[in-house]
Amino acid sequence: MTVARAVGRVLAACGADTVFCVVGSGNFHVTNALVEQGVRFVAARHEGGAATMADAYVRVSGRPAVVSVHQGPGLTNAVTGLAEAAKSRTPLVVLAGEATDPRSNFHIDQDALAAAVGAVPMRVASPRAAAATALEAFRLAWSERRTVLLNLPLDVQAAPAPPTEEVEEEARRLFPGVADRSGAVPSGAELRELVRLLLAARRPVFVAGRGARHARRELEELAGLTGALTATSAVAKGLFRGSPWDLDVSGGFATPLAAELIAGADLIVGWGCALNMWTTRHGSLVGPGATVVQVDLDRAAAGAHVPVRLAVTGDVATVARAAAEEVAALARRPAQEAAGGEPAGEARPGVRGYRSPELARRIAAEGRWRDVPYEDESGEGGIDPRTFTIGLDDLLPAERIISIDSGNFMGYPSMLMDVPDEGGFCFTQAFQSVGLGLATAIGAALARPDRLPVAALGDGGALMGAAELETVVRLGLPMVVVVYDDEAYGAEVHHFGPHGHPLDTVTFPPADLAAVARGHGFAAVTVTRPSDLDGVARWLEGPRDRPLLVHGKVTGRRGAWWLEEAFKGH
Image 1 (cartoon, rainbow, N blue to C red):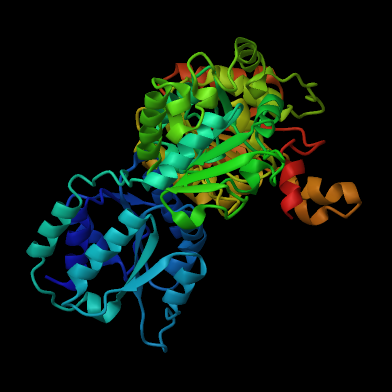
Image 2: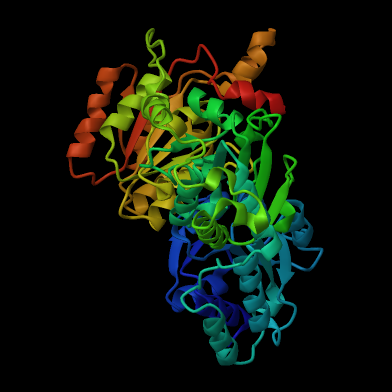
């Protein structure tokens, strides 16, 4: 029993079911130890891809994964993916070999590197401590929602280790089937104040984030009792799909109607949602007289971006369920007895807060971006990205999971392609890095093999992540990779171009991305007009035995609508 094998055995006992990896000499043995214990092995072509695949897999599946990388450059290659995971509070254990001799070419300060991007550095310091340290790394990652770097010094890895059976048994006891992390209960005072504010509100809006993705039923019950409208941050898109009171996404991607109704709210409750500048449009969606409440497992999240009247610390589903029980009980009592003798206000039977038949009709007619008219700008060898996206939305099967890269294009697939539920959208944008989209789609596809995976990329992100095209083919994923190609870093073009700056540094000659994809084993179609989408239809009707790349040559005469808001933050 070596230290490397001991670490692998304990992490497998904790419930890690997939390891995403680029294998080098420094992580060869620990990776094989995981595989020996039945952990699924997924080889990426770049460590950054491995980290992002793991991040997306955990987000979508709700199950734990491990990243395994070589010492030094293996870790530095993974850093952008680790930064995204750490900023998103994705529970992830990253195993990295470590060269502790300063004379080694591979030597760097791996602790400092991890800490710099928000990950938690740990180290297996001795053979005797190996199993317990691996267990603590997993506990910290899973229970506290942290991305943890577990350094494995090369000399320690190879040393003999004590038997691990007792620690493995402890791991299985602590994480039986990887137990649900929910259930944290709020204080009685916080809950009572939340209920009082809900009962007093005339125009309440719930904005649910990633921390609420498991709580649709509880939130919809409470929203129904209090007359609240429901919206989400971008990462939770689809959570309330099918509800007549669903405003879809709040923030820069919000429809005009959603922006109007959220800005008109007198109470906004963020459920597992940071209420950051993107979700609130730099605060403009929080009306001047609105009361703001945040419900989150992390007390420090409250008020980080907008001032809050009340912070409720607890699991979203647990808090919503308790609040609904209290509101329902108060509605059954005389108004003067409710809330400790105070009037029950808008919670009285028959009063529905923000909801009305007229508003339901407006949401049905105006509640999606597809309902908003636009002037089609297709022509001169390019297709309007809105027309392109709507055409794809009409063709692709409803049971889909869409993963989005970063760039000028990203609002089009985010808002004009529908998803069936919160499990149909994966949005790795906490770090706003270009180039993560394809790896995100791979991780999401492995988490939900029952759905058609769709990767939406710009041309810049597609070329940055092109190494993983081979991974898509090798894994046999029936993926549709959609590229919005404006032959530029479009965000920079539309940021600096209107001010007369030269754009030679951010524009590029045409590239045949369809040919690049075919070289990796994809089928491919190039789209410059709506009729070219017939090639997508033929692929969908066929055996889908190869992934498909859809190379959209999109018009780029103007920036996306959401950029006007995004540029306020630069």
